[in-house]
Image (tube, rainbow, N blue to C red):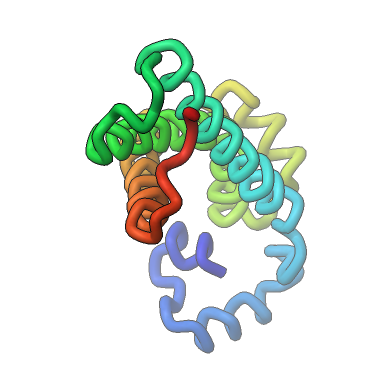
Length: 165
């Protein structure tokens, strides 16, 4: 429903009218489960990439760049590592999830076509690259800030930042 509201002009934007419209168009849209595969591909793979990239980037920075003991660095330096690691994880998780996200958006605009037809017509290269720069520019900083808030909370609770020894 969210994708439909975002991608279809004049589609109802309030919950119950949008739900009613989705139910009326359920055959063409495959509602409610028609987009589940691509949605899960986007969410599960993107989230796994996000966590894996964040943890490994932070660890890599402390292993190869900031090689002194982590405790020797100020909290602001450690939180800078968090922010950079978060941005890198945002970039990588976007790269992983972008094709499925593009596919879901196209399906909302082309409800009469199957996912296979859309992939066949558009191609994996276009699904992976069209709009990617814009999406990274938006999601990279957002994910970086989310990790920054997460580690800031951990610091406030006395747990320290992610990565390093």
